Image 1 (cartoon, rainbow, N blue to C red):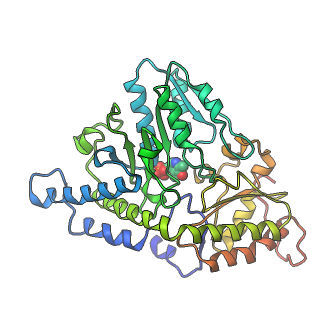
Image 2: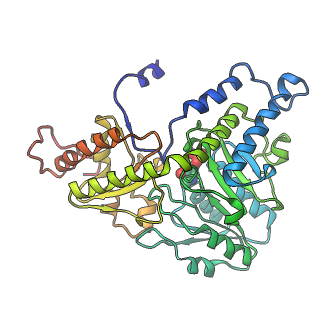
Image 3: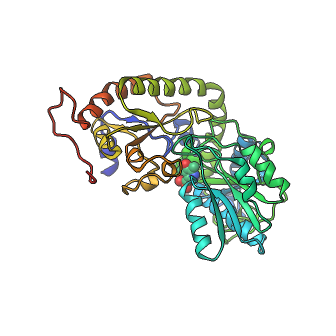
Length: 402
Ligand SMILES: *Cc1c(COP(=O)(O)O)cnc(C)c1O
């Protein structure tokens, strides 16, 4: 019944692709046989089960190709969060004398919460600041690495602003100082070319639901030769590196999505970038008091984070939602709390501006018509919220804070 309600014919305009993405029809088609006929356990001795090993291997090859890794360097996990937690957990266990981590103040909560928990257990974390444009000072990062530093973890691209960090440079610094380096690259497939060998990283986390596959499947790249201790302990799956019966259908979905993300990099990125730029430029020129949060470049081609002066994002999102437009303020993980985004706060954005910030994130499925609809509706909404719209007939929507 709930599903039927969701499938009503209400028009719906999706601008929240950094939170999650639509499952591609091709991906669903690839995974379905593994939920219907091919539901065996790949670890079984009989053919009905063990013939699925081939499907898992093929998907592993597709995911490895996406990041230029070798097959044995890919561990399937349940999500991006698990991948990042598992990497840092392993580093701390395999380098027992080292009780210091270096990261940034703008990581996804997956890394933030891990770091905070590590501090509570007596570990030390250096939380590197970012500048007004959301960018890191790599010199400062270099200085933060100590004798007892076990690992550095820095995201490749920020999910809220799209700002891209100089990962190759950071990885080289870590290698020179014999410190392991993890990057959360969850936001990047289909948007940036990924090559773990060229980047020189030891660990990289991805999550399939950010690239048009279902939620609940992720992967961790572990560079060959890197010491490993499992986070999820159990059966000998994933070469003993991650327990739990293989999520075959989801793994197959991830493989197909990885293949499509590579094609997307060739075919869709210039169109998405142009659409994002048109959307952003139009909003900034048609509405007063709009500023971009984060550097214009280097930035993910699909992301726009805009602050609306004298407006509350929660109220904007409510009006957008009434028109069927999905967007977000800050990260989805903090929705529901009215605290300003930790990313924008770290950038030195005032609480007032941060609470007036909306993130719009596009995908290859975003159409010109969707952007036009948003551009048609948004100016009046902002005017209404600022109490200045002559056309306003409805009462101004107030968020809980005002
Ligand atoms: C979505 C996201 C995650 C978390 O991935 P899950 O699979 O939802 O756990 C981690 N990092 C970034 C940058 C993300 O955007």
